[in-house]
Length: 428
Ligand SMILES: *Cc1c(COP(=O)(O)O)cnc(C)c1O
Image (cartoon, rainbow, N blue to C red; front, side, top):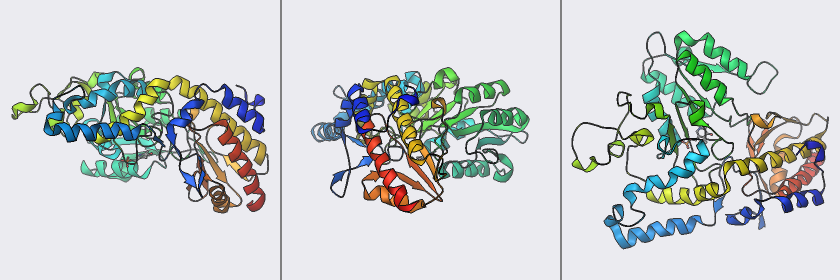
């Protein structure tokens, strides 16, 4: 819908909810309370809400364990030996991948290191990595220590692409130009798919095409993209990616991550990797013999046997995503975030108190909006919380709000806007 049709009235918000085909999904989630009242929860970018089905999925595995113990590995429909396969159809849909290109395992930071073992293979001439400036700290530490591990100097090896002076987001042309300019010395492009601080979605397709042209591998950290924006990793030709499941994928605090490895690497046993028995050919795994033979596809990057309880919580959420579908979710997401943007602009107008630094075009953002607050600062944010709004504050002066389409409503957005209006009157 065009923004001109949005209205700052409760009746409008309620009518949008009434027309929303996904509105019932809200009741499938547990909402936290603030002072005894259900929160307006805009923090799904940090920790997604718990589906009401999660407990029963975990309970089922507890029962399997209690009743079958070690036999649970091989007996029954949900034998743990093959349990990783269950999540593949939904993950393939969410990531835009073939099923053999994805597998759930480990945590994000662990996975990114494992993937860089395979895809960051610097030489004396080609050892540099292009990434975005202001990346998430774990990503900065990973790049820095990978570079040192190979004996190079991070200050020399890591090329950060940032916004131009006076701008908040990074221009695609600047990323592409850097790839072409540095191609002779470049070993890897590794960056976020969706920037955690500004909410900018990078043009992963164009970046991947440029990398292909210059023959440099490309990987994306999709912590803020998976389950938020539609992805086409296979078609875009991305070499590798990883994500976490506890943000938009609602799988529980610190829960299991996953990896994508493009099928062109599926049968390349010469790619270096740090292996474990679960990545070894599963037909021969229990021969317990020397000589690592990787499984086909992403499965060949697994190290250890599956974390069954973690996968159960993950599956509870993935089943919801698979049922809803990313395109339906995205349709609502664009409207919901568009409504939040509209109301913020109605309220702050040209007072200069608030500035949305997330791109205004839907193609360049997910559901999160990041607001620079120029007057009132943290006091405004604290006032939100007093009125039951759970958002996220980043020093020195950014508020991140993520209305997530699976469980937030247009009424949530409207109610937040009324609180914003009052809070600015009081403190800004
Ligand atoms: C959330 C997030 C992480 C977290 O990594 P874990 O290994 O799950 O702790 C890493 N990178 C980015 C970009 C993130 O947004």
